[in-house]
Image 1 (cartoon, one colour):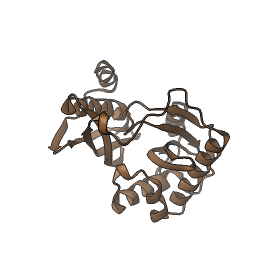
Image 2 (cartoon, rainbow, N blue to C red):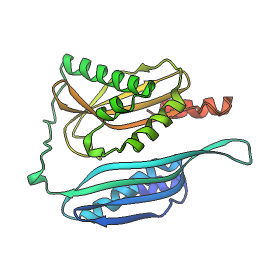
Image 3 (cartoon, rainbow, N blue to C red):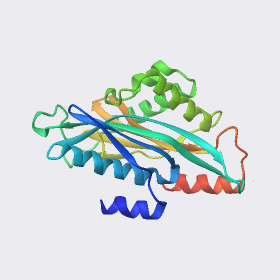
Length: 240
């Protein structure tokens, strides 16, 4: 809660976050906030979901959002979320089918190679607008509809189209805090000429990976490339 409050103070007042409860969980909703508040809004959602689940644990599921790029009176552009929805369920760890890996688990050379190949293949599917192939790569827990997948791919392609992409070294993390469930994860950051982003990959089994999260930052094709936009993008990419 302290971290959420600090982030909110730094980023400005957060939008109202509403909770629509359902049996075994619920859905959180926030609307009309700048992209710079993303981390603070997410922290507030996590706190609200955890409070709703009480003694049970919280599992984060399907999310949906829409982002618009606005031109301010100063002439600068600002990315804003029109809305952000996040579903969650409450579960008992004693009956959870997802099990944590050992804290000292290390990936083999095959694990590292397989994860990178999967990440490259997944983004290649998004590059060519292959919705079916991209959908197959996401975790089932995300419950992405075809419309959700199309929107995700469209946003990704609008920021990365016709660009060369390079992956940075993978970072492996066990039992990620805030992830939907425990297990072994590979954080796969990537860079393009005017874009960057990351995939968070869940190791479902040896040689089998699923996308738990994807974020991309980049210059929209319809926006004018300026020194200011280049500096803003560099700041986001350096933070990955």
